[in-house]
Image (cartoon, rainbow, N blue to C red; front, side, top):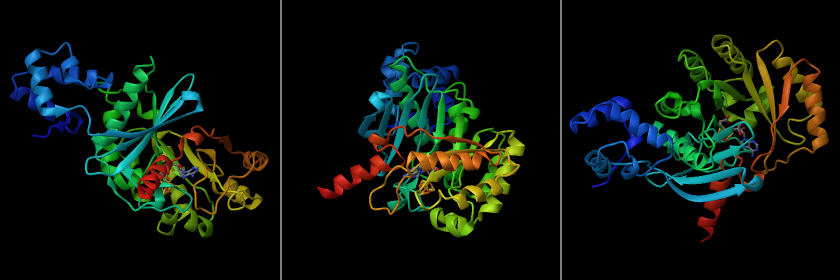
Length: 350
Ligand code: SAH
Ligand code: SF4
C-alpha cells in the first residue's frame, strides 16, 4: 500500500485522521511542528506516543517530492534542488542565504504555459499545475536544509518555474499554509508572488486579504514589445495591467515591485527608460532590474554593467525607485528553469 504525503491533508483532515486513531487533535500541531523543523521520520517525533508514530509511518510519508539533482553556487550560499513530482514531472527550488535572511525561490507549475522567449521554463512543453502541498513541501525541505545550519527560512518568492496566477487556487492555499504559525509561520509580507500579468487573478488576489507582495514581470512598457517578450500581454495589455497592480497596491497597502529583465538592445534603450518612467508615474511602485541570465539558443544577451547603470539612472531621474537585482546563482543554473533545462538536455542526450 502506498502512503499519502501528510501535507496533502488539511489541518481538519489530519485532525479527523487522528480522531479515528483515538488521538487528540493537538497532536496535529505537534506533527506539523516536527515537519517545520525538517524532521521527515515519524519515528523521531519523540513527543508522540509510540503507537501513534507507528500508525503515522504506516499511513503517511513526510513529502511527495524526490530530489534528483542539486547544484551549489556562490560558495555554498545558493543551493538549487531539482525535485521529481509524483507522476514524473520535475520542478526546481533555490535557497539563497543572506546575512539577515534566507530566501526560497519556489515553483508553482512544472513548466509554464505563458512561453516568454527569454525564459528557460517557457521553452519546455507545459507539464502540470502543482498541488498546494507540493508547493509547501519545497519550503519544508528548504527549512530542513536551513535548520541544519542554524538558519530559518524567512522569505519565499514565487519566482521559480511556472506562472503562479495560472495555478491560482493552489498558490493561494499554499500561501495560507506557508504563513500558518503552526507550520512555517512566514508572514505574507515576506512572500512575493510574481506574475506575468493575469489581470482577473490579480483582482481576485486583492480580495483574499493575504497581504503578499505582488511582483509584475513588466519587461516592456509598450504593447508592441511586450506582446513579444511576455505573450500574455496580447490578452491583458500593459496599461490595464498597471491599473490592476495599482489597485492591488492601494487595497493591500503594499508597494508593487515591477520586474524588468534587461536584454541588450531590446529593452534597455533610452526610449524604454522613458516609456517605463511615463507608465509608472505616480504609482506605488518599485522597479527591479534583473540582468538577463543567459539561456542557450535564445537571441538575447545581458547588457554590460555601464548600460545597466545608465538605464537605472534614467529611470530614477523620472522619480522612480530602482534597484538592480544581484545575480545570485548564475553558476548554479539558478535562473528559473535552468537546472531543469540542463538535466533534461542531459537526459535527452543519453
Ligand atoms: N511566471 C512568473 C514567475 C516566475 S519567473 C513571472 O514571469 O513573473 C520569475 C522572474 O524571472 C520573472 O520576472 C521572469 O521574467 C524572470 N526571468 C525569466 N527568465 C529569466 C532569465 N533568463 N534571466 C533573468 N530573469 C529571468
Ligand atoms: Fe512563465 Fe514567468 Fe518564464 Fe514567462 S518568465 S515563461 S511567465 S515562468
